[in-house]
Image 1 (cartoon, rainbow, N blue to C red):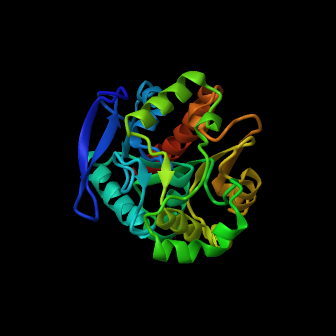
Image 2 (cartoon, rainbow, N blue to C red; image 1 turned 45 degrees about the vertical axis):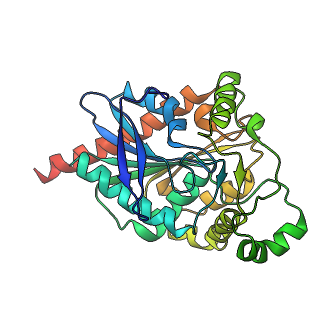
Length: 294
């Protein structure tokens, strides 16, 4: 398998299309990381954390989301599709890993989706022990011509599948040249998308609107890491929104020199070790609670 998966499976999504689930798992996982990939990306991008956490006893499970499955240009019917499929994915994980604790991980657009899932779709599910968010795409850092912003709703309505005229950012996702090379190879093979439709861009813009006002209602333990030299997501806006969450729930990390992809950056093992320590603390708390009830 191309991304060192241990196996593949299929998720039947809300549009009744089966999409690939990529799975990195130890023989007897202690917990499951439900991972949501970023925009124009794919589930195989979780190969780096997937392999690292597999060696620590955690399974990492990610699926290729609607609009991203082997398409050059990402197009979706609406942001709600991501949320409906996210709910189906949680059900799939709980069905195939019964009784195991779940951590929801999201990077970039995946972190935006995960945030909406935590706020709107996932009740206080005892299976979910926390969220791990990387470079959340809460506010766009890419300079978009003012005329496009002004006409975004009209363009999405009149030319929904039309191409958004934006330059490639692949070269500023990570400082790791080997991973950048892999990204370009994925683009060449139509595994990684290179274009976005007006409808897709408008859906993300709509999902971002008003989110800052909702964040203080967040109720899940969260590990967040923000990249300081992010060319795609506004780091300061992400920091402000994440710090509006109850401090008792938030472990916040800022990496000033990182490009966008924290999980693929040169300091990723330090980040992974911090995430592992945080997850172990959540699991230890669960075990302590069980002991008290026994």
